Length: 288
Image (cartoon, rainbow, N blue to C red):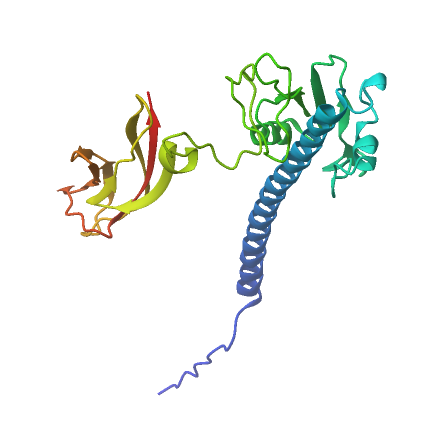
């Protein structure tokens, strides 16, 4: 009778190790690419937020200067040196001419100011790409983006009625006539109150989060305005665990309140929806 000896090999072969290392390298490369992409997107958002804030502060300072001096800063030279004059007038604090965007040599692109048309104060900035310009333009109301450049224009402060007077910055005088801003934006307003005590923040619009079957109070709207409600889905789940096929957010009018609901359809039909199964963002506003 012959006896065979059986040998067990411990560890991995060279081929197995090679394949493992190769797969690991691919996974690491993919992870690094995703992290880099996310960091890049976050950086662009931060750049747009920072640049929009700098543009707002520069434009606000220029409008304050125009109120005090009846001309734009450095208007004689078409406002090219406005930043330096605003700094000397102590109307600018911690607002550099350097933007967060870099040129091809790695130097910071600077904001450019002008007032060729003296009815407006203009600010322009070159970003690093057309996508960055579009993202920044979304942060600056009334601005325009062309290729990698963003331009914003700001009017002279609005006069009050026929008197030609301007509202003092300390709030010591209230307007007694209709304000016509010429289809321009109003910046820096904390709130607007009516004689009846209604305020822009509290009665014209508010946002809250609700669950399925929650009641939402209707605001008291000024004048002929009517309360309106809009909803958007935050997240939803099916109690059965089946795949989600559809979601509807019907609203029931209960007189002084609305009831928001979630109708969830799974692969087996309509699902039972509990209070915590759906989260709904609710927008309430007054409008005509």
